[in-house]
Image 1 (cartoon, rainbow, N blue to C red):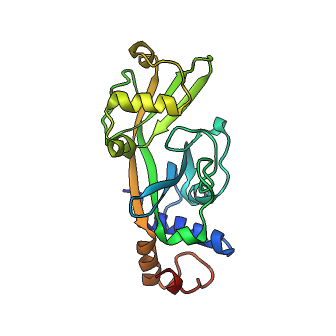
Image 2 (tube, rainbow, N blue to C red):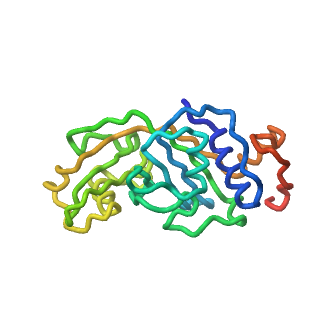
Length: 228
């Protein structure tokens, strides 16, 4: 696997420095090869979604993880998605959510997903729940092409079958007309897999302490006592 705990640590580093006004962390030591990627933030014991954004365009990991942790995304033309099929917004400033605050930091979970094994399929049912992510292209009721995606874990977490997943994704992609089986057959579907790593803020602190607070950050971080 290419994805690693260090990638989640780096995203936490970027977020931490942003929230506390520090200079951004230096480039990390893990590979800088290009991959399509997503950064997902969840919060609390029930792991509610707090923000999720990414791209199907391969990006160098160092800049890609920085960008999708914090910064404004590129435009729809460059293939930016959040995992619920919307094509606009920010990373932590995901348009569906207010910006993350310092107070929320101790309750966050970070997931990094690197997307692999893209395959165009002829049958919209030709993918496996819990194994494949899916990206669909369709023509909406106004004649415009729309695109939307779910990461591999979404359908399984929601308990959806193939039809429920496709129909939910169409709605999230903005399709408002009745959904028929004939319309589903017109969908262009690409399936893919992902390598995923998740880390809690507590695990991040333990990792940082183990590495003497030198995980690519060029300054000492303040004490973490106030989070305990």
